[in-house]
Amino acid sequence: MKRFPILLAAVLGCCLFLVQCRPSYSWDKDLQYRLGCDFKKTRAEVTDYVRKYIPEVTDEQIDTWTSSGALEAMTIDGETRYFRNAGRNLFRIDPAAKARFEAVDGAPSPYADHSASDAVNIPEIVGKGGGLAAPKRMRVKYSLVVKPNVVPAGKTIRCWLPFPRSDVPRQTDVRFISANHPNPVFSGDKTCHSTLYMEAKAVKDKPTEFIEEFEFTASGEWNDLEHAEILPYDKNSEFYKEYTSEREKHMVFTPGIKTLADSLTAGIDNPYLQAKAMFEYIDANYPWASAREYSTLDNIPEYVLGAHHGDCGQVTLLLLTMCRYKGIPAHFQSGFMMHPDAWNMHDWGELYFEGIGWVPVDMSFGIPPFASGSYLSAHPQSRYFYLGGIDSYRMYVNTDYSGELIPAKKYPRSETVDFQRGEVEWAGGNLYFPNWTWDMEIDYL
Image (cartoon, rainbow, N blue to C red; front, side, top):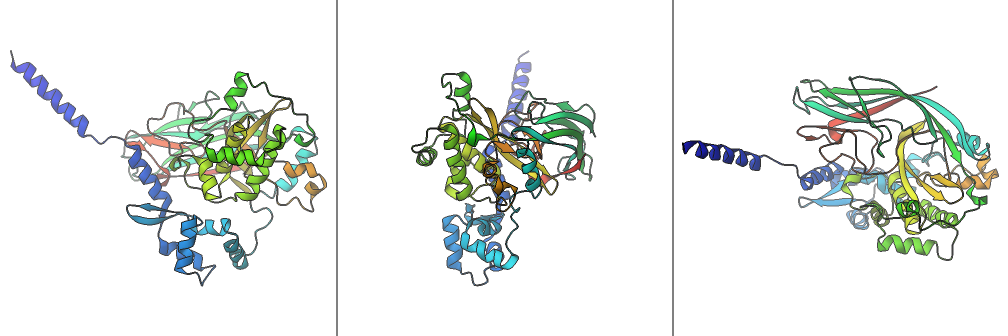
């Protein structure tokens, strides 16, 4: 009679031992893996790249650039490792190095950081005098492919793909066409990340494909803020408090944010002119450079201030955080730039001015470099097109950052801030970017 409790206790003890011994998820280990994917270049590899443009470069100069952060590096397992694009970034952010690069490869065209189609699209939008204009309809085939044998055969792979939103006035007539797996789940506009979710079983030695097709229409928008009347905010409203408050991790009013924002807006009371001063400063002082994965950064705006450069999402978060601190309602927005000659992932945001409403702001596109001698130079207000305006070639997926996915994801996302390329996992863990590829085909209808 006494043997059953003893046997049961033994079985339960064994089960508890197995649970305790089973490897559990660790963000610290995951983070180290992610950092290793970003910082994978050796000093010799970076030096060889630099020598293609500066043959006489010395070890001392490499040391100087490393110390200043112009060559981004990190110590991992006792070894100095360089960011995967550290070499190329040097020639983007260091003026002297940039001149040497251009002496070899030639100066970039005025469209290097923009799309050539903007030179036509922006006048098309501005010419309407304000509001929505120049709609473009697009059909998209989006694919995400998990590499063979990354997941054991027979195991279920869970996949979230980006899908165009229906709650952004600039994006209309969204139409789902097809998915290559049955019963896709749409998040709709219930969360800040719009997704289409599918599942599939892994097959030995074969890639696992997730494909969706859809159509939508995107319009450009322009608001002539230079001549608009900006009314006082109702600072006691819940709306105002929500969009001028700090947000966890990447919208924090740090001493650096406060000092810079206050210095740029000293003596300026008009919210638009405050935003304009910050917009001009960031455009002039933080050049675009290839970015580390956002999930590896503790505070993105602070990273930009320290590194003196940033990609589209990084400089956008810097501007939005400073605006919130100065009492200008702001929120993040992102998806893709869909220009016929230059589509890619892209981030921007929106600012709220009382009496006008929400207006788009694209900090990364900034002041168009091709304005001189063009239609834009004849219309000075268009110099600040991207502060209150946006082009027609966009796909809106996100209205904020770091939201929840539908259905919920078990493991931390590969991209814990933005959502663009997609997300993939299985019962054994998240599938990070090296385990899969993505692509997009666009037809302009």
